[in-house]
Amino acid sequence: MKMYTWIMAVVSCLTLVCVVLCSQPAMALASSFSDRTVEIENAQGERWEFKVQFGDGRDSIFYTYSTSDGKSLESTVETQLYSDTAPTAVLLGDIPILAWSSLAVAQGDSDIYFATWTGNGWSEPRMVHADNALADMSPELTWNDAGQLVLSWWRNTGSDIVQIWAVYNEGRFAVENDVVAAAGKATTKASSYYSSISGRGIADPFKCIAIGDSITAGCKRDAAHNVNYWCGHDRTGETEGGYVDTLQELLQDINSNSRVYNYGHPGERSYEGASRINTVMSAHSDANCILIMFGANDRYEELHPTSTRANIKLMADRAIARGIAPVITTITPNTAVWDIDQYNYQIKDLARDYGIIMADQYGALWYGDDPEYQWESKYSSGDNLHVSDAGDVLVGNEWFETMQTSKLFFPDFSLPGINLLLLKND
Image 1: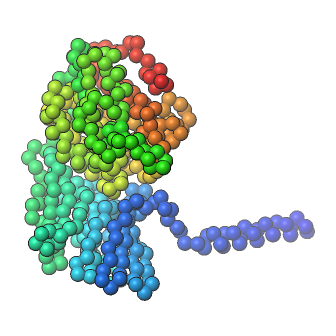
Image 2 (image 1 turned 120 degrees about the horizontal axis):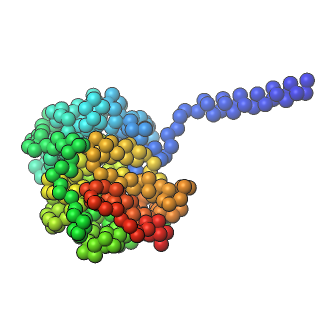
Image 3 (image 1 turned 90 degrees about the vertical axis):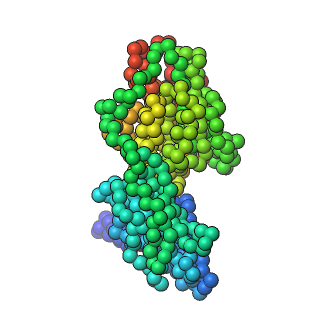
């Protein structure tokens, strides 16, 4: 009898716990929202705040509406689209207009949509431009000098990054420069991607360009957000900084005339890299490789991973067109924000589809030279996004090992006498 009473008491307690916990509405964790918030407020004291709610690749625009008398509403913008990111909003009079980038699953590209506030929700979303199979990204609503409402965004045409803009008039946006496809769109497939590249001869020095964001530049930021000089300054071709020191040392062990030129720009997104890559390569026409590392800031600007893929592909194509061999990489770990897997999936898929040489910096930094997890304790500079000095050494080694296994860079011989593990542990 006592045992029965005890069991029933336990069951009653478990039931009570279940009632208390299971009856609560599902709460989104703070980490499931974007850091960027768009805020607008009209003369009546009505206020709207927008941010992206991440949902395992299916992202949505979360908004909060509040009034001066204390009323409030929290919800998501219902679009029936696969994934919505990068909101931008302005007031037209007292009425909000919202624009964003949406991923179209059927085509795998992103498009720009807009909607207006109806008083208790949003109008049916409307695509701003004619439908296409290109990556439309990073929209921005502004007013021009003539007092017109303008929506601008960036588009990857397959052979260029162009800015598109549309002017608002009578409930719709009229696109004024709808570039649908530029001439010469690359269609190269895996088996022939590097066919126009002659490769590096045994006696030739390496001349490599390193292009990327703050990771490439050598920015260091600790847990208290203290930063070094290179978190706010662009690299302009220095043969140092970040992983460049380690990689150049390894390459100079083979040929003392080898050089690695650092063009890391802190805060840069992949479409900005694609816009300047030709200028960078023009400064080094004798380069035989370019290392492309982008994506971390795309996540913060809420670009769709497919757009990141398209922009990295454009950079690789532009390098091929100049006879410079591209090497791409996965995004380095970011445990300040966990949802970068979709970006790395797209980068790996791009490398697989076209046979582009790829380093795995994410995998290298996650574990390092130890089977146990090492990123936060050893290879992050402290903010769980940027790379420590030890991490830079590891990144340089990963680039080198990737190049070493490629017949394009090392066609006829292996590299005796170079102990990468010793370099990692220095």
